Each structure stands twice: as C-alpha cells, then as structure tokens.
Image 1 (tube, helix red, strand yellow):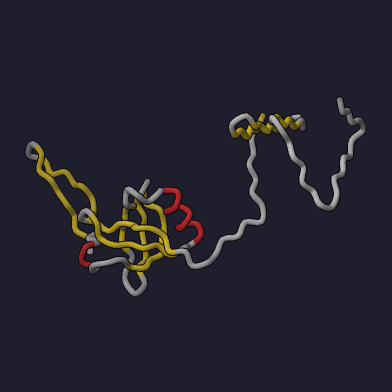
Image 2: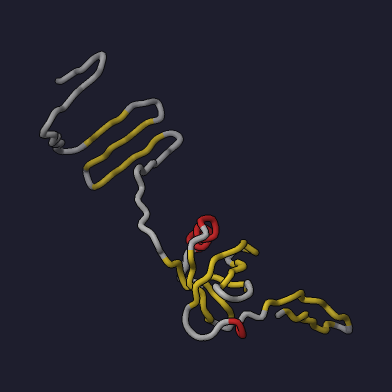
Length: 152
C-alpha cells in the first residue's frame, strides 16, 4: 500500500515521494523474511513468507555488514516493528559455517603481537619470530629445508 505525501511550502506543493506503509503488514513479534534488494544504506526490500514485499530498515544494534551478507547469501532474517517502522532484528542461522582456511593478507607486512612475542611476515618472503622463549612441540618430526641454516 503506497500513498503520495505532499507538503505546502510558500504556496508551492513539494512532492516527498511514495512511502511504503509497512505497519499494517506486520503484527507483533518477529517474522521470517529474505532480503530481495538493497534500496539505500540501511534500507532493504524484504519478502516476508506469505505476504507482499515491504521496505525494512536495520535496528541500530545490527551490523550493516550482516544485513548485506544476508542479502548476498539469501539468508533468513528476522524482522519486526520498532520505532514506527519495520526493521531487521537479526539473522537466523540455519547451518553451521565451517571455514577450511583463514587467510589474512597485507600488501607489505603482517605483524602479530602479544606482549613480548612478535611474528612478522614480510611481502618479500622473510619471516621473523621474536620471543623470550620458543617451544616447538612436534611429536612426529621437525624438518628444516633451506640452502643455508645458521645456528649461533
């Protein structure tokens, strides 16, 4: 249901555009939906199961990146009424996400630091490990493959 809103300003009529009336479509509580498309930053068109698509915002406690990911992956979101409009409350996780590999990239240098310990990886292939003590715990085997190994 859409209605044109207008405002009189100094004798002129200014058209404010069409507004989606989401309130009559949603009862109390949370409803399952899928996001259809992004309308603007923090605004989406959502398809509730069993009803017409509506425009929804994002609750301030919900990360916009989560909403964008739900749109991209077609994940189920929970929507409901808050502050006079329909908003996304969060996402419904329906499957376990298992990552085989985590990749952290840096164009020049990556540094991991905890207290006095430091691991530095450089883009030119050098790795530097600095710590007060280093323990290598390998019950099966430790292998060094290098053209030159120096132990002071």
